[in-house]
Amino acid sequence: MTTYGRPAAVLFDLDGTLLDTPGAIAGVLHRVLEHTGRPEVPADRVRATVGKPLGAVFAELTGLPEEHPEVADAVALFRERFREEVVPRAADLVFPGVPELLRRLRSEGLRTAICTSKIRASALELLEPAGLVEEFDAVVCHGMAPRGKPHADLALLAARSVGIAPQACVVVGDAVDDVRMATAAGMPAIGVSYGVASSRQLTEAGAALVADTVDALQQALSRSPVTTPALS
Image (cartoon, rainbow, N blue to C red; front, top):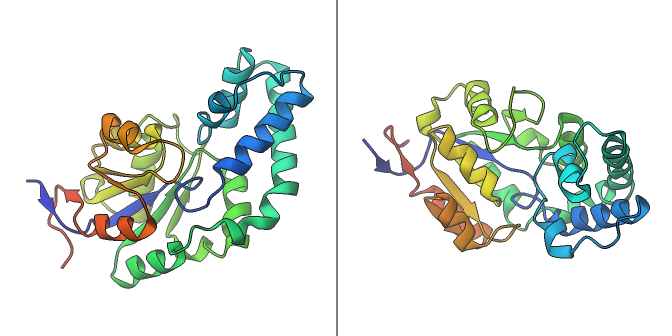
């Protein structure tokens, strides 16, 4: 039966949910596209791809197959420039209130995990300088499960990694694919509208609740729909 209260585990997206990186990511994407001779891709189209695996992003933006050598070269160049331009600023990109929220959840006995479309090395190179890596029981990334978002695989792997049944987990993310992944995994989703997708887009995708700020997210996590009894 569906009840309302705290879940047993919270599975967080990374970019646009914990760190304010979408603008920086879009900027690097633009510069890589310019380098490959495609400066004409509209800014809104580029930003809409933030949060997806890089191979899929450059395939979509260039119109080339994901296995095309030019896509692979673009992915490699993006990672190099992101590491040089964005990673050194990781600590400054953490959304205000996020470290306190994570510590509070863990102090209350909840398990926490990252569930991201970044590969593991790219996720850790942000989490470590941001000072957040120790706040998670698991870091689940693209390539660690057969299929990425919006399929259920990453969310189900994250649930197994923290030892919590899927029905007692909640997914928190800023993108439509985060919400769709949660739905596919049988988990409720809380959308955050301060990242990539709008409140309307998140709600239409199936988010149970949408938070406009980190403070509102804290409140939403206390009344999230769960299908097992909430923690006392």
